[in-house]
Image 1 (cartoon, rainbow, N blue to C red):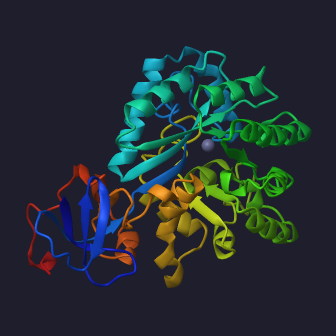
Image 2 (cartoon, rainbow, N blue to C red):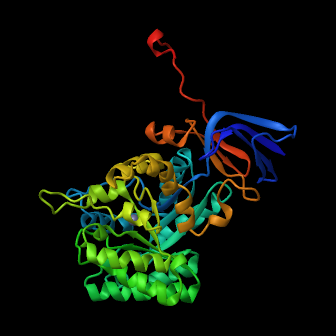
Image 3 (tube, rainbow, N blue to C red):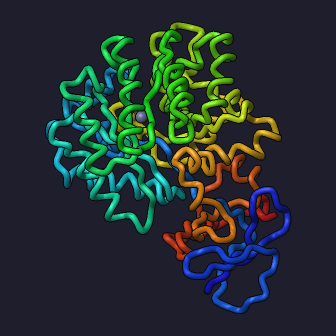
Length: 416
Ligand SMILES: [Zn+2]
């Protein structure tokens, strides 16, 4: 039995205590009259761990590799650069990079990751590596794997078979990239196939969907329609949907209704989207993001993700979800005080819902004692200061604990 004391929870002004037994939360109250080992959290804000629902762990730290530099900064050159280098991968090399990527994310407070893994590789090197890594790290972090055909289900030889093989090998979700298929018709066929495979193997779906400024790229419409007719909206995610930010309002009006009806999950990757999209625009230049604010206002589950850590698609990225949130709320113009009270959902609970992990997630009695401690006392302070994570707790034990930054010297002006 262990107690965490003097902590703040979202939406509450007084401090609370959390009691943990056998790794689970058994009580949450302002004062718990139990004497046991106690950790004083200094009045800081405690959140459920950050969730990164869209990442490419097999690609991390490849941006500077020989011949891998993306000179145009476009999505399509990124895919080409990766295609040119992936034949040299080994399981150990992928695992080593991916482990470093996971470590970085965890040090920023992430405890759940959904990673797409490229299966358009007859040797399935990356998938084997990430499956092994998931097993190795399972006590510390939940990793969900998407069987993702980076070069297309129908535009890459035997792409569909490779996606199916990925599911049989242990991937949790069916992936796809309809806007990259060689024709719109092949893109639509890939959406149908993704749904068919999800039903056949009882898996989730997460498609890279309409990651383009082309307002005519509307695979989201078909994915949503199939999610409704098959009744699998809760299990279905559309990632990116950049074109939805360029589409006209009459299409968007109809889609909001259908998305809500389907219960579909939407993921936006603000830093990558703003970096990769708008590249063919002169001025005005589009932001490249989907309609995050409007989805949020319509009660459609939407969340933010990192997507890339130093790969051919994006030269930066370090797994810091607070940085992603900061970019996202600026780009989506979600900064009314009412919105600022809610936007932490975009990197916490909404991601957990997308991953269908909500039963094990949240600071509630009966759930695993997984949480993070921010260097802030309130949600507003956390966001405005882009507060760092001082500790990450998993099943009641510290994964790590940092000291807050301290001065070596300061003059009287800084003493408050
Ligand atoms: Zn992606």
